[in-house]
Length: 95
Image (cartoon, rainbow, N blue to C red; front, top):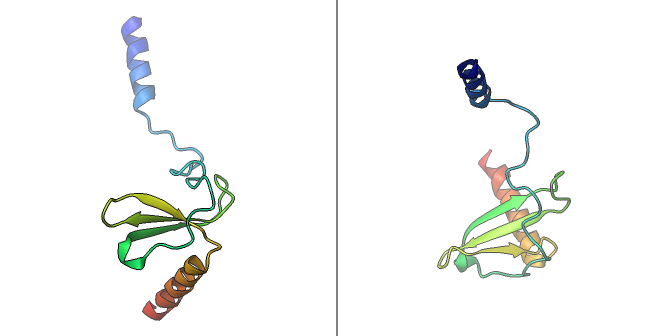
């Protein structure tokens, strides 16, 4: 009886249950508004996250080249607005 229960438990643990998809990011990553400007030469990667059920505001996270440090960029800043506009323009020209 114990071995049957053990086998049943092992089978249940090995089954891949698919449910509602949960955002891998979880809550908002940026705790404050973020910085208004980062020198473009220092930027290695920029990630833009749209508002979602897990975070109600847009977030722009910049990874720096030298230190691999991540910083939040203020989406309301002039620099961020220009970056988003240029990225959309470049995306359209690639199509």
